[in-house]
Length: 158
Image (cartoon, rainbow, N blue to C red; front, side, top):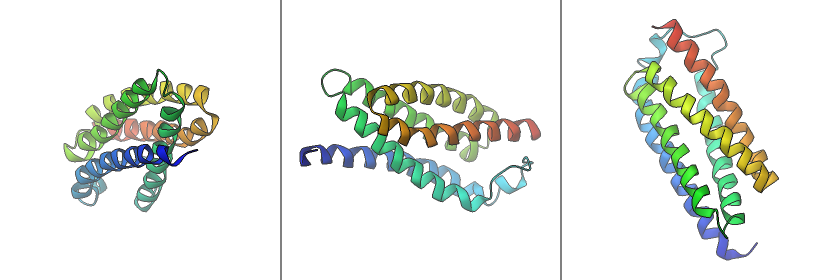
């Protein structure tokens, strides 16, 4: 791997953590006020777990997308970048809908769309680069779990 490829990695990391910052901005004001008032299932993870998990996931997903983008430079790099950007939008939008607007039902619609896109990206990433697929898998699994949690919270609070 040549050093020319590292600036693109930095861009993937910056864009990814910018989406994380948008989500965090929507989340923080209500995570300690509104969220504790919701009925939640017994299997809800403790609040302190979300920050470290998401930080690791954002790092892994940026590296995974960069690896696939780099391997698809000949023809599909733009498609990879566009799909990755779209999932970042849906990812950040979920926080805005769920925490910012306090709308678990709308957030559920968003997370279902996100999950479907992530599934497609998981297949794409595994085909392009096994390391990228392995890096993407925890994100997909976490969003699968989060989808169930979102569904349960919506159901318990409707």
